[in-house]
Image 1 (spheres, rainbow, N blue to C red):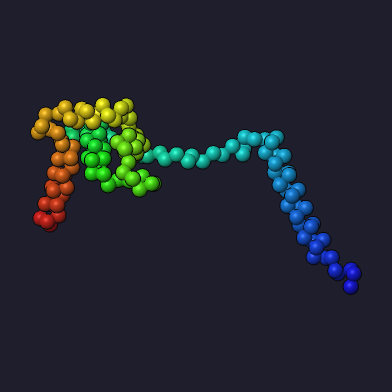
Image 2 (spheres, rainbow, N blue to C red):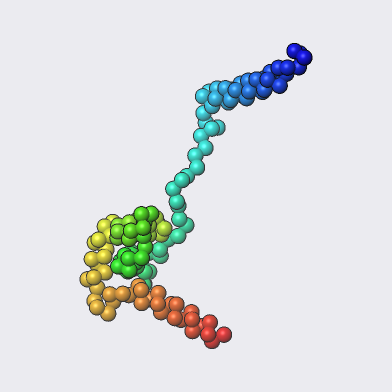
Amino acid sequence: MGRGKNVLKKKFQQKVSEIINAELTLLDLKIRYPEPFNYSTSTTFESDLYVVPKSKNLGIIGIAEIVLGLFLQGEITGKDGKPVSKACLARGFEQFFNLKFGSIYDKIGEVFTRKPYNLTKTLDALRNAIAKEDRKRKDK
């Protein structure tokens, strides 16, 4: 009875010892040869989208117009459930479309210095594009 009593315990200790030795060997290799272990995964979002430079109806000021409209609507919220700031919205658009506003407040100021009939130029162009597509679909 004494011979088989500790067999499972000894086998378990043996397996644990093998795992520890394998981990120590891996750590030793990682210290001696760090290059193969330098695999970094990018945790930052990198968008494939770009705004066409100097496009007729969009561009930086057009995106600022959209940011302003969304901000004034007040229906985009942060994690805390509160409406986000213009700067926060602008950062999201900058990251999403690979662009830089510089100062979003200056760009929004440029939206308001437009002539009255151009105040919502980009939003009007978006509305017209959707209406045109709607007409196309209805004509089919």
